[in-house]
Every structure is written in C-alpha cells, then in structure tokens.
Image (cartoon, rainbow, N blue to C red):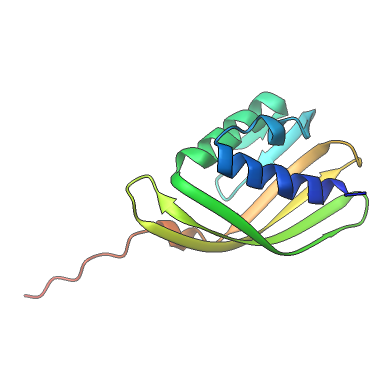
Length: 128
C-alpha cells in the first residue's frame, strides 16, 4: 500500500501531464498551508489550487522526476529534478526538495525548496 508521500508524487506527475491540479489539491486538508521560496503563504484547498495553478502557469511543459523520498507516517520528504520549458520556450532544468507534513490521509503543510537561479536569465555581456 502506498503512503501519502508516494500518492503525492503520483498526483504531482499527473497534474504536470494533464494541467489539471484537482487530484493533487484533493490531498490537501482545509487547514493546509503551502510555501515556496517567496514570502507568500497559501491556505486550504483553495490556496492549494491557486498554488498549483501558479506553478503550472510558469511552464509550457514540466516533468518532475523523484530521486529520493521517505515517509515516517507524519512527514514526507521528496528530492526531485524537474525539466521542461518555460512559457517563453526556454528550456529549464532545476533540482529541489519538498516536505509534507500529514496525518496519513491529508497534507497539512507543504514546503518546497529549489534552485531559483534556474529561472533567471543570465545578463548578456556587451563588448565596448
């Protein structure tokens, strides 16, 4: 039987393929919180929907491959690498880790940490 972290990973990959976050959002409880590298905090299932729609909105295509995961029944850890294309067609590849706190049935807290430099285009050097 899969644990909640494994269900979360599958739901994220389904969301990335379909563009529909419903299956992923359903894993979040009404009191859930979501955070990324910004200072914004999203709350509840509506916040989860907004979070995942904003995530998908960054990309033409995106696919997360999980390199490691663990779950102790209350906390799940996922290490991953995502590859795809940004909305402007630029290729992107970046790595990160995500943590979920849960009760075995629903996610109560989601935090994700990733290499944000992958989203910054290098300045073009000009010669004088």
